[in-house]
Image (cartoon, rainbow, N blue to C red; front, side, top):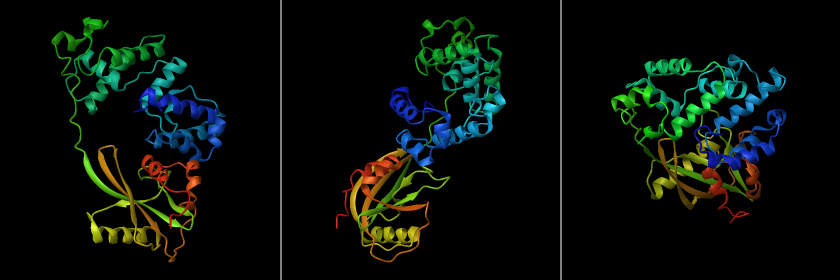
Length: 321
């Protein structure tokens, strides 16, 4: 949960999650939608799906016990080199290196590496540095200490070198290059995106689609959602009707606008126009497991994207017509 998410945000989610899934067995046997519902709002939902699969691997291949060998930890879904090293060293005190944002910065300055730390050369050098500085014992404490040193003292801007116990070993400090190391990459330009979300009503139920693997919010349920190219007026309304028909095989009455939501996903700035539309009787067969009709009051039990949840909470309990 702490990957790419701040501690203050994670704490209430963590407490609810471990209350719902107190054991590996309980997590492994849960439905994916239940896991995603408890993760909803944290984002990066692939983490939840991988942890769910990881629990199943532990149960089926390791008798519910977490492995102590680095290679076996690396084989678990969603665990890469840094996470495996952190687990192995902190949980089991194995001599395994770690490299994450704070230690990348710290080790780059200590080594005086002026290149791109994300390059293959930079990664090779820094992983070797992280390996070389490991002590023979208490590797878990050491790894936690260097992460804290990077987080609290060797900060990205205005590092507190006067408080650092390693200045005599720091090449960047000796050369006065603390502000230039590590080399920073320019942030990618954000892209504006215009989308529509449509709540299709049939009697007192609304249509939901399960997001497919490879899509944003894979495994979550969502209303119909698609990009819009037409800006306004009759052309936009016709585009919405055409895309509903193309996605579902359903025809609907002209949609009515509910609201507009703005949000960001990675480098995209999304303007989401939200509509309500009435199913008007031409029906196609929708695949079970991918589509479902649900009552608005039942949406609280299903995992939705953040904007999907905001839209769901704007809906009346019954069809407004």
